[in-house]
Image (cartoon, rainbow, N blue to C red; front, top):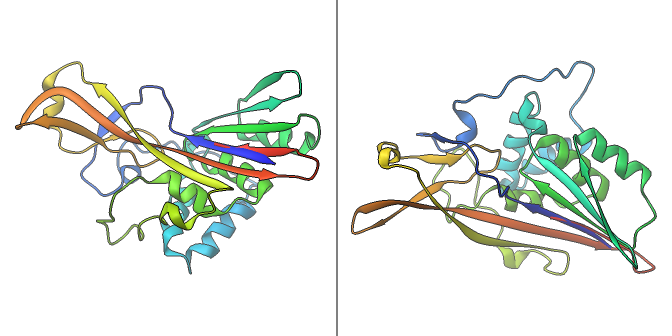
Length: 236
């Protein structure tokens, strides 16, 4: 069984202003990344094909394609916890290539493995999604946390949690509360976390009074697979 866990970063992210429907379409623009001799991976190509008949995957497809030729394609952090009968070990990956090398060379060993991924970065999604053949809807649910779709250009809203196989995957939404250092932030109407995932920063106002408090709607997603003999893998 494999467990995969995708979560928002707990680090304090940079904040910038947005007057568009997606924070990934405006400044700061990511630096281009040399892709000479490379081609888009098979898993991202699969998402591209599926999005044509599954509108809920359109935003995921757009984000993976947008980031592919830029440094955003590797912006993220990944690690794995290995569960043995008598101990638990951890390993952090410094790049998607390290993750791919690990997946190719560690087919046996621990009783179970839990992969941890922060942010939706194209190359990390390619490595995990392609190796474990994860339903792209898993990453689509993690990418956005909007309550309704107010854009005619993005996609339909992600699938309802009740439509997913809860024994294999699920998502949990939770709030992160933060406090701004000063009141100057009131000058900006649209604030988002500087990351690949779509996370708005909403100010908390009581009777139109802003006391520097705000919250971010976060998301944790979990996917797993069990193998004969009691072995498992997971991603979160």
